[in-house]
Length: 229
Length: 279
Image 1 (cartoon, one colour):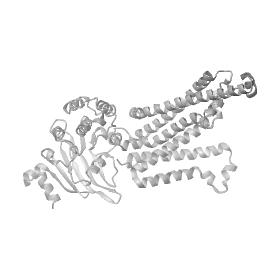
Image 2 (cartoon, each protein chain N blue to C red; image 1 turned 135 degrees about the vertical axis):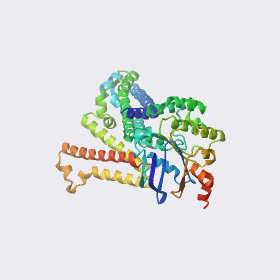
Image 3 (spheres, rainbow over the protein chains, first blue to last red; image 1 turned 135 degrees about the horizontal axis):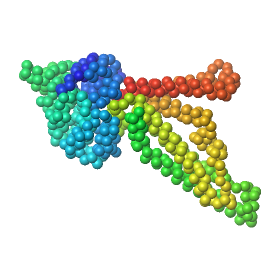
Image 4 (cartoon, chains in turn red, yellow; image 1 turned 90 degrees about the vertical axis):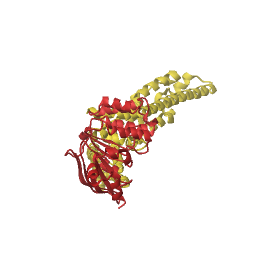
């Protein structure tokens, strides 16, 4: 389980996060929702140890994040992280070289599913294909937790559908996923848990199924309630 | 260890084209400069001999043969400009080796900092890569000098020109003797100071990457503090140290201060990359 306990962070004088707390379980998809600049990406970076927090603690299966844990958790940022002159094949080789958790078979399966050409250079990929490669590099790792930052941001409809279909596949099963997205419609039916952020605070944390059954509300309904007052 | 070596290899593969370009510029400019100056000197001598109705043998008897040391000095800019270019390129790369990870369309720093290896390996791999680039270019210069000497003799002939001992040549040249030290002590001083400068550069970048504008101010203050710390023996009241201590004692004090600076700088750099750096 990923436990985020009262984390706070300031950029200059602005409080980006104030006392943010939530949990994300293995086998569940947890969605962080909020408008731009609310601190969603900062939360993911903080979990990965890519930005320090001023207060609070973050535990992954009871341990604070360290380099040893990067074989257990992976981060898929909103843009590709490999140098533009590398080919798709070279990117996969790089991952294989450094990660003990790299699953070559799964990588090949994903490359086939996304129809990525191994000889294409990262810098020459379309936005959709770059997003798919980014996803491949994260999902081909046999890790317990996957953090995804806006995987649907700025890509075409067909690529979005293809990426969304990954969420219902065996590639995600059993893993704990934290996702930030604006495109809630694409994956609303797949989300297990929602954390609504506003002004650096958690406005509401709920299980989607529970709200659906007990209150008869969709994620969008709850979002309207919270954000529109 | 395994991942550290892989990271060193990775850094080398990302810079080898630039390193090769610097090497080619050095080879071409130095060889062309030496050939040009050899021919120019020979023409000058032949013209003078002709106008004086003298002979080459008489000229050599009066002025002596033109040594490779003289030839190198005449080639001047063609020899020293590529060396300066290599030094400038590597100094710039001390900063770029970090900033390239953040800037550009694809921020590789996300991947680099989430590799399942201690972040100190990233830090030391970058340092090792810089060190290897320096040694590669210095090594090239060391190999190039006898080749250039051979080229000099081949182009000019042994009637007017004479070969030089490479070690004498290096000892006579301030820049070359700094890059290729004659003694182990000089090597420790020159390369030790260089290594500390690289560590300070790394720490300055990491301060900026951790605290942005405040980090730049902190980096400037840190560099100034290091300067004052290293100058402490000179700044002491009465300037006792310069006049009172023997050279070896002076060297020992500066070496000890240098070690303290290196240790603190590396510790600070590792602390920043592990705990403070922001992507």
